[in-house]
Image 1 (tube, rainbow, N blue to C red):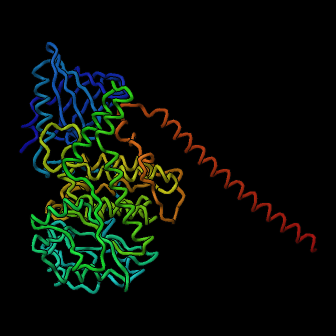
Image 2 (cartoon, one colour; image 1 turned 135 degrees about the horizontal axis):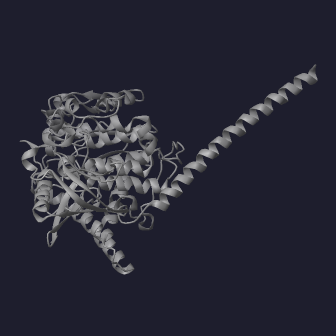
Image 3 (cartoon, rainbow, N blue to C red; image 1 turned 180 degrees about the vertical axis):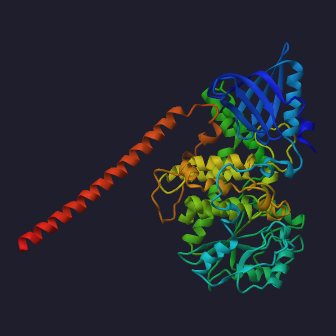
Length: 550
């Protein structure tokens, strides 16, 4: 298919652009295969707008006489308006945008056509390999091994080719365990706590069914993570009621009789359409400028967004507590193990592991616990808060995770190497990007699409020093301790940087931030001067003593 077939009118003059925080501007609107571009008629020919079609969530058309208006609602929650002279041009532009923003084939998306304008210093596709992670693990324990059982994605289609499992469990046993777990997602290592040698594993639900089916190999596998005389905890991210209903459909949970050393705790976290509806309600509340205080607060509460944040953080704190304070190993799963499970395992690591609070450590966490672990980004991020089409698999699971990270960052502003801008950048790229990192639903699909050969990795761009400096937290001071966030309702706030960023100018906040950076830099310079003067003074005192001795 040629993009030209979808573009009925490639160019229109005298289009007026309205967008948040900028004056209206008149210019020429151009449509390409992947971008909507508006260039003003100013002398310097400054480009005013360069919008990826994949960032468009929905469009609305309005007409007043022959003047047409297209309102474009974006996946990054921006709303822009184009006033187009001529009804025919307006209709043509609107139908072209709709066709180009809803392409079915992944290989027609912009990452397959994007060519970087920067020098590629680091191949982001090779930055965070499981082998490198295993090397770090091997330096502290020899109880685990790399298994290539899933080399051709033949055992579990949503797992990576290489996984870390207990050394005492062979591949034959893993095959049997895979048949006993939903989607063949057998328990694999998620995190090793160096402080006490406890671990966190993740999987999908066991297929116990109504007959109470069991699997000796599964029991042996998860018992292999226990120390002698120690108990473990299974954190099930479903309510007991939902888990019991799953048994009737062939799923279920671990029976106490077969897992006597494990205590099961149910921590209910919502999924799928409930989360998507919550996002839609929240964004609607944030965009309604006509609220009085009561209406705003009731709409914010009705969205249940902060309740979901609280549920996820509570489960993550529980997992971290079991590992660090109880000295127990943990297995986390829900139904499939690709959504709420990953929210819990990744947030628990941010609480426990200082490395995950650095930029590269956090990138590694996203790769390991989301991309390689099989979170279906393509399905979950197909639509954002404005889409009119019927939801299928969409849900802001990863955005909720980023929001939880922001809540912890706000409570511990000096413990993270990255700022909230880093988290916002990741949110934007999961929904629309020139990079191939978040395409596909798992490593199997990415392999078939040949993303490593045909697209650029987000990490290749982000990890260049000049880019990285934009996302660094000026307050960062490395903190090697476990950090325990408060999950009390009073401690949780609306993430304005995402949800109010297009409704309220951040000009004064930005100015305050710049001033803070200047003060911190000046403070560093003064400290360096003080240290230099101290050294000089010590040298002079030494010289004086030597003179006296003579």
